[in-house]
Length: 251
Length: 336
Ligand SMILES: [Fe+2]
Ligand SMILES: [Fe+2]
Ligand SMILES: [Fe+2]
Image 1 (cartoon, rainbow over the protein chains, first blue to last red):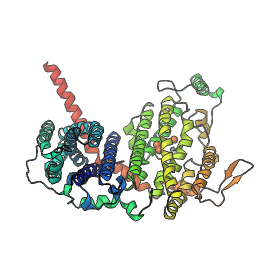
Image 2: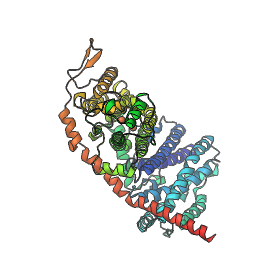
Image 3: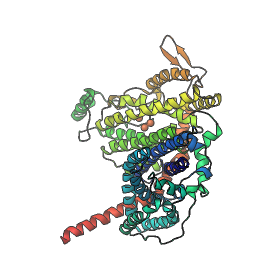
Image 4: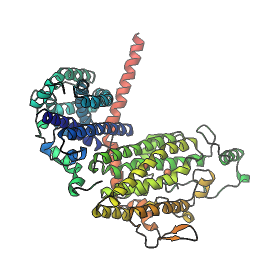
């Protein structure tokens, strides 16, 4: 039971980073300035690296012989466990940055908790990841601030973006039975405890960015349990194309 | 010309003899001949400066536009490891573009000016990037052939006479070697370890990329009117035909190891010359691609223009924010 929960939880970690990396890599070669293009690609590479560590470990915990690629390429949408937030389309650069900022703030808090995991492997992966994510968070906080407090247009775009994605933030903090079982063993933290510090950081950055903190309380949910938005199917169609078209081939 | 800069005008149609040179020009040429690097602050002939700007900026544009055909497969890479490698490779190419724009800026132009010339279509990039990437095997073929050809051309440029260019090339060449290896590694996976279907993909990719790769070295020497001057300035160290031959000689055994064949019925080893003889290159196709009639010219440029235009508000916002910031700092100092 605990192993099944741990597998489930590792999939969530792996799928969040994988799907966000996939989204970010859509920007490669299309960024608004070269330096930005390269920085965003760096973040995609970091997240992809983390995804591979989580998924590899998930496969080992499951012990049915599935490696990172079997898990990434041969599951259907309802078997993915990522947050709805990370599968949302890139939109304009403001939307990409808003998504990144909401995610990074949460991701950074989560990894800091996972450093204390009673599972040594989880703690070790978190230790590697937290260094990268510290930089991600500094960068997205800074960009949201500058875009919010930039021009009238950038402010408008940034406000629209943070409003648009707000309903996808609640899911990050909503615990389910899997979270609770693992938190009881000290393997992961209860995501509910991340909400307050998350909100504090977001509010502080928005204050500097002259952005209004959205006040909506209705939150979308389901990604963690495999109920996704329509976007995920298309992400997977693209990502999994070769593995599906040439079953069993090695690349 | 330089591989990613296939057609660089030098502004000079006939070489000057020593006697025709001014004292400054003679001193400059003597430094070049002695292998002493020319640095941004040194005196240099105006045509040398302009030629270098053209050559380096064409090369930079090629790196930047070159992100697109391979970027096309990042989201579809077949394994997470391949995705990681491809993503970092395409990111390297952007980095190469940046080093090269930086080198060009030492000659008294700005990156924005140079980039505007690319977007307006005034300055070209390598014709190779106007071909489409249709299957995953194209990613292997590009690394193997296109980056392979780039290395062949750029290693000598590490010794070119202009200091900042030569140093940029040294940095770039290290990464290009990794690019070529990852491409050939994809080809090995398809051809030697893959299924017959995968090997067919690799053969098809070679069929489509072979001739355009040979064209990358630029027109035949007999038609390269500006080469002599560039050679004297040491910003071109080998002729187009020499490099092309070297590339063919290096690549054919690699194709044999893969068990695929280049699409050239006239290709054969020449015992006497110690080189491969090869068939006629379709220079008509080359000139058409250069003129804008390649399969992807319009898409490539459009993609770049679109990214630049879509990013305008972002760049303006960062500038505006920086201005507000420095204004606030100035006011704070005044108040203090
Ligand atoms: Fe070059
Ligand atoms: Fe390059
Ligand atoms: Fe390269």
